[in-house]
Length: 223
Image (spheres, rainbow, N blue to C red):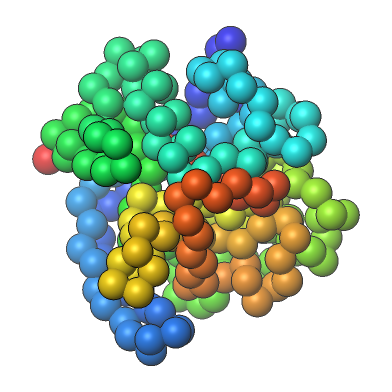
């Protein structure tokens, strides 16, 4: 399969700096970012099936974001998609351990800082636009996900960063407290408005699968 629904043109971003915050600990910290690319929409069911042959989503619709995928599924997809594209896989997997090769040119999950920087697109408020215009959430979703890119994009041309599905990031949430749990960002179609904000952090076990969690792809840009 070919075409924009399978291979959207990634958006170049950065360099820059983003301030992350955690409401639980009342802590804030700044993260400098190098240049990177981020897909304008989450990985669709069509794209996921083209690479893996799998259809894990709760409702079959090729243009909706793939859901029912764990963090591990997302990492393995990144490597498989890189190999399919003739790129060097980013992740080295050894049992339950995953290391990222920063020199590899393949696809990967965004870091939490990259995700929030992309979501804000230079804005400073809780959202990059009016919620009903930019996101599928509990108030307007009808109880299900929707085809990607059908809500308004932010100033940098990125869609669905809020609402539709939560998105896996590469980072651990807080390994000293939550062990292997990884970060989820963005809110989903089943969430109330307060969960669909640029700063909201959620955590889950890397094996967790549910019908409002998906992911999007990033790539590093060589210095």
